[in-house]
Image 1 (tube, one colour):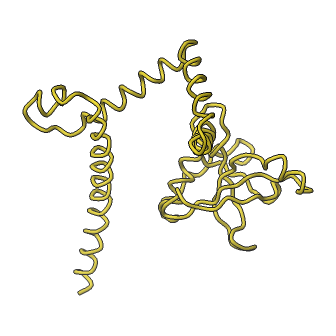
Image 2: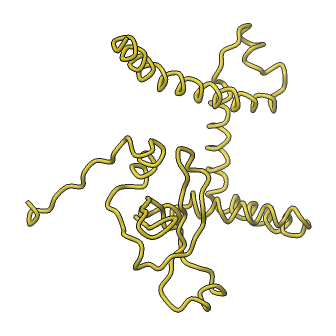
Image 3: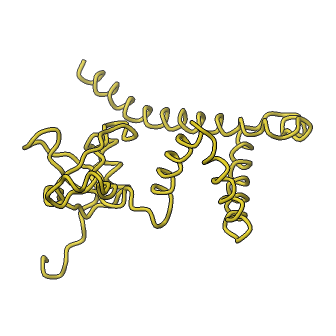
Amino acid sequence: MNAVRKWLLTGLLVLVPGVITVWVLHWIVSTLDQTLAILPEAWHPDRLLGVHIPGFGVLLTLAILLSVGAVASNFVGRKLVSWGDAVISRIPVVRSIYSSVKQVSDTVFSDSGNAFRTAVLVQWPREGVWTVAFITGSPALEIARYLRDDYVSVFVPTTPNPTGGYFVLMRKSDCVELEMSVDAALKYIVSMGVVAPPAPALDDQER
């Protein structure tokens, strides 16, 4: 009976990661294949090749992103983007949604952004209980006026889904900066502590 239980657990450990990986990739490819709808029907790969081959939407999405990025990187493109932002900023309701999303995307994806740049160890949700979190910036000026100490903005993600979590303001002195990279910290959180990050290299003095 113990052998059967061991074989069952071993089979799960072997198959579950592969099945979930395939499912996630299938969902991503299927979602991106929807971008083919912007092409004329006569240009669809299924019609041209006579057979359905998944993944052309991924190539089209990459091509669109590269094209938009190349155009927006030059002088004329920046002017067009600035003009588009100005037009959207005059539309009620839409401007609120667009500006909020743009601020988040600029912070997360921009090279000059400071979101998710540092992994820290904090006591959450109470003293004596520790978790891994990320410093996302500094408190807004209006909020900072009411804080008498040096505070930082911290995002405490949930596990195993780190896209949800809590935004809190903590004293900088209460945040223990970690040497692990953001990617390693995210893997540690998603795996619920199973996948431990690699140990940091020791200095010559510590050796």
